[in-house]
Amino acid sequence: MKSVLLVIGLLVLGTPKEGVIKTYQTNAAASEMTILGTSTLHDWEMKAVDLKGSMNVDLYADSLDIKNLKLTVPVKALKSGKGPMDKNAYKALKYKKNPNIYYQLISIQKVNKTGANTFHAVSRGKLNVAGKERILNIPITVKVLNSGGMELSGSTTFKMSSFDVEAPSFMMGAVTTGDEITINFSINYN
Image 1 (cartoon, one colour):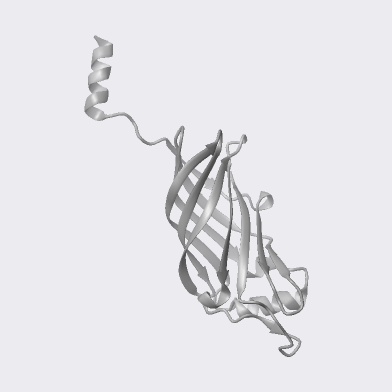
Image 2 (image 1 turned 180 degrees about the horizontal axis):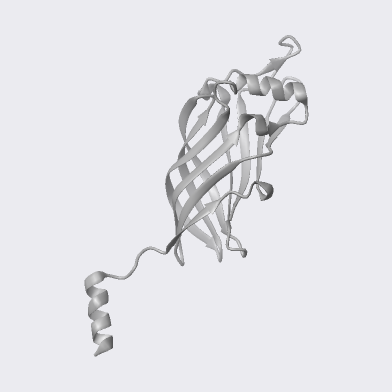
């Protein structure tokens, strides 16, 4: 009799379609974000030495749904190891008026399970750089870690001018940076 009631209850109420929604916070110490670019002199890179964010994830057996994801990178946390280059970058990014770079997820699309604990997807979100907001589609890999955390990794390329950022120059304009940059990231959440 109990099993008949259980079956009727499942038919009426349906089976649960969502996993358990869990909130994760960034682990900046275990995360990496690198910005790569070119100049008339040499290629360059800057690393984000600090970032903060959170995400809410609904994890299923064969899929996942990222419900919310926010990431903030302080402009002054971008470091090249070369003081003058950093100052030029901060100025170009209008850090006094816009001290942070923000990313906020709009939706997660095309989620495919590619391994026991790995998913590929496309993150559609709003990126705000130097006070200008643009929508980007970024291919990502999501790994569920043995520790219970998650790692999001990926890469995106865009032009600084699309955010009204003028390519920095130095040495009285003799050296200028290219307009296109690539951001590689591996963000650890726990």
